[in-house]
Each structure stands twice: as structure tokens, then as C-alpha cells.
Image (cartoon, rainbow, N blue to C red):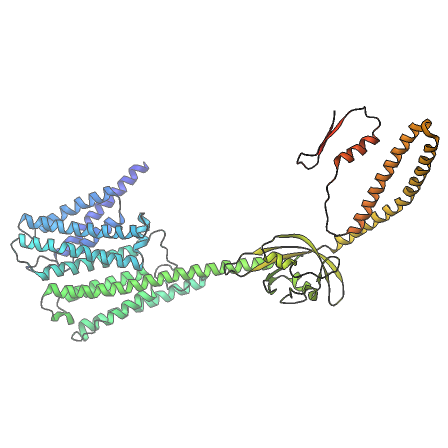
Length: 577
């Protein structure tokens, strides 16, 4: 059902176009001066080109060309008696319409747009209008000799006036009428920022009241434009018909193109053009001084074609300007919203966020960072101590080893501890600093730093370390006593000799355990006093460690223990065989 409905609509469209083309051809024939093979006005060419542009399907175009040939053959037979003249006339019209369409498509392909809607978008622009005018002029000039040959075949004489009239009439008619249809038929990708004939500037950004006021103002101005045009036409063709003041219409066309949408400008200028050509063909106005009606109509059409191109170039330029302005405003609003969101996020952070350039100038900071820096807008990187920053033990930070220098050098810093002394109160706080370089489009070297206050954690850690040191110190006293009694027992067993071998073995184990406990307590004391000192890992002989463990495990059966210290693992493996 859907397919049959689409086919029916397509058939109705073809029938409507054939009827419109036939009507346009009849209207054109009625503007032909007596004895002239060329009509003063030929809208049928514009109707044909518009159909070929708006309906790019091959079958649609084939049907259009066949129907066009049949209608033109009938119409041409009323002008030319010789069959060759009729055939050449049909050929000239088909070549004109087809050549203009091909020229537009070639231009479109060069611009990288191949789809139908993209073709409409390309035509609905200043460049598209120029391409339309150039294609129409080239096709008209190329087919003008064919019309001259048709006149010769029908028994007439060669006339340059006929060739020039064909070229000017056809190119202007196609440009004006097809340009108007393109302006009225918007492609989905070519939406203007205004509605109807509304004025442009920021229309889509206005509220309902503002849009209503803009539409009301637009209608009043458009009414003023129509009234002014009517007054100028009355002046040119009535009150001051002998004065060469037709150029005033160019100013009216510029008004229409500058202040109104392309649709409104196209309709207004095209309507004005039809009235002007009709009055001129009747011998009215300053152009009536041209005796040849064909040349008189040609001059009038060239004038209105110039007015149309002027108005549409201004209209499309203003439309593009409005679109670009709308995009710029949207981008500005998005950037402002993003900046406000970023500001809200950074302001709500409890950690200090600061961005510094290579000279130490504060590029960006939040409220926490401002309080930490005491409002400073720059940091002296040669002496950060001026701003209260020191190493955790209170020693100065060297410039070549500072976090700022390292971050600008490309290093990512994670959780390094610094001490800050408030210049006013002398309060000491500790901060965990993370930093990284920031890439910039201008090549400016900047780095971002995040400072998290870890004073409470450091105080807790120091309490733990102090407790560990106290416990280790308290354990040293009984352990020293134990070591003394172990030594006395060892001396006594040595005096007894071989009768005390088993007791001596047990005593040696006691001594070994005592020494290991002393090492553990020494390590605990070292950890308690190390605080944030740099760690220096050292290799550990696992054979010795395992041997000491096995010496204490007297419950294990005799055997062999092998330590695979050559394997690169987190810890060496030991297995008992």
C-alpha cells in the first residue's frame, strides 16, 4: 500500500510538472514579437531546469526530457515551418536545460557534495547562486548557435541580435526563476535562524515576546518595502518616465536582500522583475527609446537579473552571517557554562588547586589555594620558603629539585609531602602534593598542582611512630637481661664440657632467637625515627634467613632445603626435599 501510494504521488508530480511546463511554454509564446523566432520571456526553460535539479532520479529525468521534447515540438511547430527548424529548436531547448543542470552538478561535485539535499544546500548560498548564473550563461551561449541554425533552416537569415537575445533571455530567466524556487524550497540542512520573513539578528535567541515583536516589525517593514517599490515603479513608468532613474530599483533590491530572508527577497525581487519586464515590453518607461522590442526586453531582463543577483547575494550573505553569529553565540554560551561549572567545582573543593606557569605566576587557583598562598599572584621558585613551603623536615626546597621544576620538565608527581608554615600565625601544616604538566595550544609551559592537607594524618602517623619507639625501647631492657643470662649459661655449659652438649645446643638456639629479636626491635626503632626519610632497599641473603628459621624448627625431619635465589620473582621460593 505504501509503495502504491508513493507511485501515485510520483505520477501526480510528473503530470503536474508537465502541465506547468506546457503552461509556461504557452505564456512564453504569447510574448513573441511579430516576425521574431525568439520570445521576449521564456519561463519554460526555468521550469525544466528546476525539475531536473529538484528531481535527480534518472527515471524522473528521462520522463521529463521526453515530455519536454513532445511539448516543445508542438510549440515550435507554430513558429517554424521546416521540420529541421523544429528539430533544432527542440534540440536547443533540451541542450540548454540539460547543460545547465550538468554544469550545476559538476560544480557541486567539485565542492564535494553529491547528495540531493546537499545540492540544494550548495545552491542556497552566494557561491551556489554564482554557479547557477554561470551555468545558465554557459548553457545559453553554447546553444545560441543552434537557434541561429534553426532560423536558417526555416528560411530566415543569420542574426546576431537573435543569438544575443537568446543568450541573455535564457540565462536571466533561468537564474531568476530557478534561484527563486531554490530559495523557497529549503533543504533540511539549510535552516535559517529566522522564521518566515522575520528580521535576522538573533531571532532564535529571543523569547516569545521578543519573537512576536520581531515578526510584527518585520511585517511592517516588508509592507514599507512593497509600498516603496510600487512608488518607484510608478515614478519610473508614470510620473518621470523620461528620466533614467531605473537604478533606484537597485537600492530597493539591496534593502530587500539586507533586511529580509532569502525567500522574502527572492519573491519580492522576482515579482518586481515581472512587472518591470511586462511594462517595458509594452513600450513604457525610459527603455521605450529602444526601437527593437527584442533588444528592449533583453535590456530590461539584464537589469532585473542584476537586481536579483544583487539582492540574493546580500540575502545569502546575511543568512550565512546570521548562522555564523548564532553558532558563535551558542559556542560562547557553552564555553561560559563550562567555565561556570569548572569554577563551581574548583570552588567547592577542599583541596588547594593551583596552575603555575614557568615563572611561577598563578594562572588559576581556587579559594583554598588563595588562602594557602595568602593572596599571592606569583611564587618565587628560587625560594619557595618565602611563601612558607619547605621539605617535611623543615629544610629549604632546592630549585633544581622542586616540584614546580619537575612538573614543567614533564614529570608526573604523585603524593609528595611538603611542609607549610603560615607567615602570620606560624602554624605548621603538611600537604600531599600531586602535579602534572598541562599542554597548551600556544606552547606556554604551565603545570597544575593539587595540594591535600594531610596534617591530621601526619599527626596520627607520628603518634603511631612514637608509640612504636616507646614499645621498642621498653622491650630492649628485658631483652638485654635475657641476653646476659644467656651468656652466663653459655659460660657454665662450656665449663661442664661434653656432658652438656644437648643443653649447649638449646642455649645456642636461645641466643639465636635473642639476636633476631634484637634486630627486629632495632628495625622498629629505626622505623619510628625515620619519619619521611628516603628508603634505601638492600639485598637480603635468603639462604641465611632460611637457615636461621630451620635452626629453630627442631621438629622438622632431617633433609635438604634449596633456595632458588636466581628466579626473578617478588620473593624467592624455598622448598624442602
